[in-house]
Length: 168
Image 1 (cartoon, helix red, strand yellow):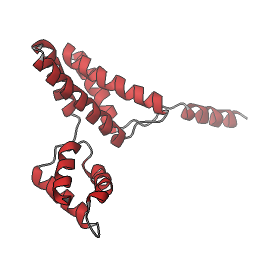
Image 2 (image 1 turned 90 degrees about the vertical axis):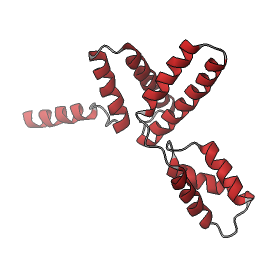
Image 3 (image 1 turned 135 degrees about the horizontal axis):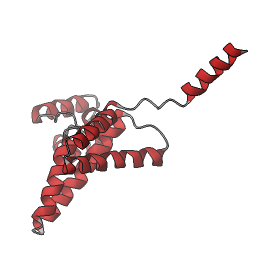
Image 4 (image 1 turned 180 degrees about the horizontal axis):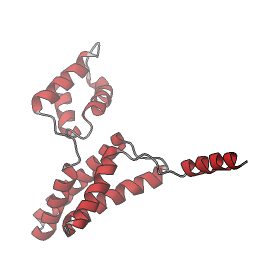
């Protein structure tokens, strides 16, 4: 009887164990704790913004965030910060522009290394070779194929321009 109770207690405990978190998410949490210990206010603030956005997406989608999804979130946040930076800089608000630039730098620490132009050209050429007859009608298929390969490592706008140039 006692053995069965212990086994069921262990099963019960195991059912409540924290989910295995992604490596990016783990790094963010560890770096936040480290920045807190080092009393770096700006860095803590930026890291908490990232964690809050990931938590929001996790709650909205009701599933654990994978590394691929985390990269998509970081990519989106980078685009938003770049847009805000340009607007603040144009308006002469250098204090806010500097804050956005700092957040971009913090976010970029968790992004994979960017692809070089030659690597992007190779990926685009490889994707175009898969097509029987390359045409502008096939651009959606090409972009979908490329996006999975370069997620977070290159700007899709630049790739779209390159694909259009190659298809026309």
